[in-house]
Structure formats: structure tokens, C-alpha cells
Image 1: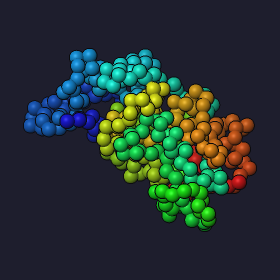
Image 2: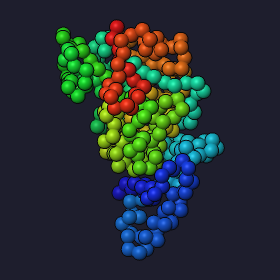
Image 3: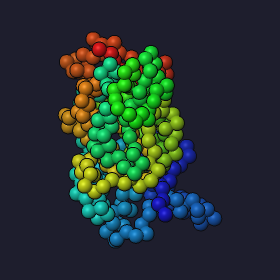
Image 4: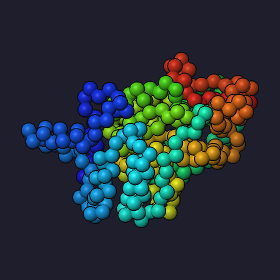
Length: 321
């Protein structure tokens, strides 16, 4: 049986301002279990039934760590070191995981040229490989919709087309996480497992996500994915260059999403989808840099944002040449 971490105690408004540990919380649950609620405790402990002693020790240390936003840099380094060790023990994988923080004076933005995209899906393939997405269920952070002329709402388009592209008298729109300034998913999360970083990227602490999917219900942009099963990725296809808040292999039962490939972008590279696009439809950059390509697009092109009336202030624009 695979077990899931416990939901946060009622009345806890903001985990970042409350340093109550899961250790103390689980001690409280033990008292409840002793009173006759043993089934509650059953779903709150990690699955260690087949673990070696070293793996068992690492799993428990991981389980009792704090929320990522509360960790010191030393605790973050210890956490990624444990995850690297676990990957080696469990899957014989050599991964390099980091915790590169946001850069100063950077606010990321993205723009999508609907007059250039031809629906080739190279972006989807690149994203799948870069971000260690589940191959069994063909999880995709990016969706491409084939659209009728005059329509600008992807829900009216075809997101499951399987034919040669481009098609005459059609155009293509891509969606993914839009990294909203006023993100509904952040407000909906009961454990504060998702938040917005200073560089504008909305992230998830997968170990604190309880899989309730409230964020998925709150997102108006088709941006969230739920991991129904243990991800299946051929060993030779696992991307070993990982970030704790981005493309590390996610556990079963967690929400995941596009992170603008922060394992790349925080090191000066483009997101995998932008780099792979054969038509130059995708533009990414620093909104605070007046000389960036994204700023040029916003200033000189006809731009619009999806569902602007919702007030979410997405950092993702569509534009036309």
C-alpha cells in the first residue's frame, strides 16, 4: 500500500508563519489513533514495507522535513542529498538535484505567437523529456488546440487532433501554467503546498501536496495535472539534471505543472519548449529587462491574455505578427 502524508491541522492559516512540525502533528494523531481512529494514522505514514535499512532511514528523514519555504539553505542541501541517495538506492540513478533560488531583478514572462504555430507538437515532446513526465499516462504540461478562425477560447478548439499539420484555415493555440500574479490555485491550496516565487514562477512542494486537487479545480487555464500513479519513465530517458521545485520525479498522488523549466531558466537557459519550437512561436524572458525579447513583443505586437476579466494577471500573453 502507498501511503499519503497527512493534511495540515485545522485553523493553520499560513504554514510559512507557523513552524509546527509534522512530527508534533503526527504525535497528536497517535493520540487520536489510540482512542479508536487507527485508520487515520494508516494513511499518514510513508510506505516502508520493502525498504532497506539505509533507504528506511532516508525515507523517514525526508518525511519529517519542514516545508521548503521554512528550510535553511543547509536543510535544503541535506534534503536534495537524501533524494539523490534515494534515487541511487531505489532506481540505480545518478541524479544531480539543486535548489537554485530566484535571481535578483527577474520576473519571467511568456508569449505565444498564434500566427506562427503550426501544431507540430515539438514543444510537448521536449517538455515531456525535460521534466520527467509519466510515459504510461502520457502526461503533458502543454496542450495545443487546433482552432477555428475567429475563435480565441481553447475550450472551443480540438485538443486531441491526430493528423498531419498544419491544416488550412485552422490556427493553433498552446496552453500551460500561466504563472498568474493572482493565482487562484495558490488561494485554493489548503496546505500552502503551492506558492509564487519572487521571479514569478508558481511552484509546488510535492512533499506537502496532499493531492486534494483543489488547485486543479480553481485553475481556469488547464494548467494542473494530477499524478494518479507512480510515474513510469524508462531509466535511460530520466533527465538527471533536476531541481527540487521542478522536474524531480514526482511521487504518486501529487499535483504537478509547468514551472517554466526553472531548472534551466534560473541558470540562464530557455525553457525546453521554447528551445524546441521549430517556428519561433514561443518567446520567454525577463519582464523587468527593457531590452528583452518579451518586452519587445509586449510593446510592438498585438497582444491579449486569456480570460483577462478574471483578474488573475497571468504572465502569459498571446500575440499576432
